[in-house]
Length: 518
Image (cartoon, rainbow, N blue to C red; front, top):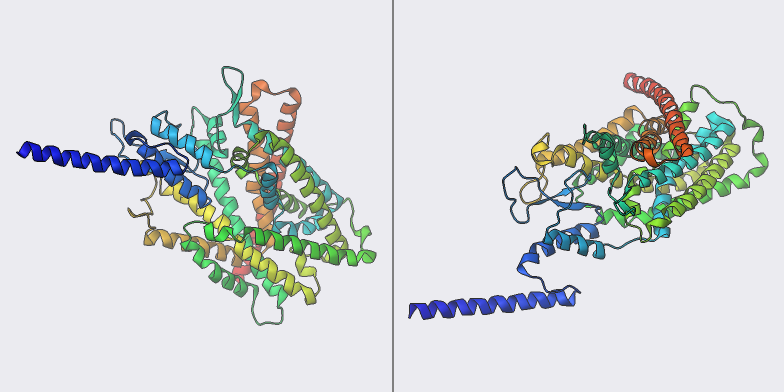
């Protein structure tokens, strides 16, 4: 009797399980997938997580957590590997399924959309500092705008070339995914992680300095827009930081990314307004002020400003990997940098001709008071809405490098078991926001900060490292003129980087001492 009862219960349970599996299979069939077996369930779960993160705008790869030798990882025990230094994907069935579905579900972008992203990176609000570079460089400054465009276009292409290698059949295949992967490959096998660390440090410095520049420009623009108010530039920077403090609570950029297109369009309109005003004063242009001489002390700072306005190499590998036709990448780089070169050169020259020796660090400060306030308020809004993007990226790199590397992490994980950030982790985020404020208060010089960043990380990521990596990884396949170009770019980039860094640092130290004493 007991045997019959157990048999009926088992049969009923099996029937319910089969019906449940049939419903799940039907659901996947309606979504365009085949019915999932028990062995494939984990793969679908992994793909759900990947799809969720992709829809939130985060470009991450989901890899299995490292475990000690001999231990078996628990099902679903995964972590996000953002720097591309993790183990290669496994050939297991569930991960193969996930990889296949993620590649299908991940929308690809066209060459025009990729070009739009590159244009946003190299045509941002930091072009407002280019007329100041012409002030100290004259025609040589214009030449550098063209030269930097050519070099950055070339190094972007050779950086992508480092992602590929030929297989046994002679076919070119993509074997790396990120800038960090390339750096690690160059330092392997003796120092397999050193290259990635260097790139991450450079990336963090550039992102944090970008945040500082947004605070500086916000305080500067507001102070010059309302000079009659009893509010100093430092006070405006504090007000701007108070508005930005909620950035410490960001979990994703989904809510912020909605403003990206609006900010870009607003900045385009502002550039048009500035150029239109300059053209209205074309009769008074001071052509005699544009000369071939350079200010030896300040021109190296101008080099950093120009280089910083072209920085986009750090995200080019990800961009090329998401293109529908990667073969169109070279053509896309050509027309985006040609357009950027023409627009930047015209903007810088026209603005300088209008104000000549009175050209200020942020060119909108030269506008008449009647329209300056309106234009600057739009620029401040763009700066405040742009701040969360580099801030969130910097936080992600810091958290991944210092708090989320498992047994290799220097500090305890800043996230709890439920995925929520711990209170001390939130305090560190707030401290990073406050740090950007302190830097903006004690060194409130847009041109000096921009020049320092461009000379240090901009030249390194755009000039030095791509040419060095290209020589290291592609040495046997390079023609003599490619070797010549790479060596020349490395040497010239090193000289410009050191010179600009030294002069920018001297200016920043003087400004810091003055503000501390004040």
